[in-house]
Length: 339
Image (cartoon, rainbow, N blue to C red; front, side, top):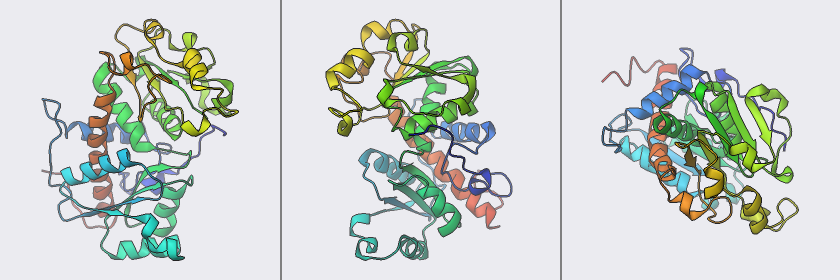
């Protein structure tokens, strides 16, 4: 897989006022827009670090269209929409009319006619969310919940919120290591883009040759490639391990779970070489004993469960902002969030 940026023009995602109306990719968005998402997400977490509820999407309909399975992501989007008081419909794509020969366009147009306001789309094809936002349903807010190997923008933003809340340092001062199956990871692509946009100057990508992508030149000096785990994590503020996909175990891409853990698994010894206050992250689901040991996953430096809570807050923010941007684009809104 080539790792060069797949640009998503900002005009697809932003309305004429420069506000978010779709969220399909980190690329194409400014530091101001990403910071607005983070700041809005913070408003949905109270002083006791608990999620709040809000009437912002009361009367609105959010449809989860998952052409690819992901229980965790779908559930957090559903929880986010319900906390915003929206009506939520989970569409069983496997039983939809697309399985009977109906085109994707016709299916989406029919769903749009059912008064859908927001589509949360997960698809195995890279660029699917962009295609829907640009060419099929531009007047429905399209949120990308993961498309192929391209992007997972809400995962990146929940990671950014977790980093900001837990380190309490500017992104420009952080050293961040991302470890694992970089080549096939839409999370890695979106995280690197978000970190760069927010000003991080030291991003370390760590993986064996068979799990490394091509095309790092376009990312510049901020992104450095490491094949040696011990060198890569030294003095880091943030270590993010990625899931090693089971279908790649015992394949030419990965010799064995044991071999990967020996060379690239995050253990106590390696974590000790990072900064003392280094946080450990994982997008889930974890393979304990492969990319990370249980003692670290459950240890004091782990913020993995915080990521889950922050994920709901970020998805609340994206849903609210995109709905606001759509209404604004259609001239139906003076302000949605004045209160």
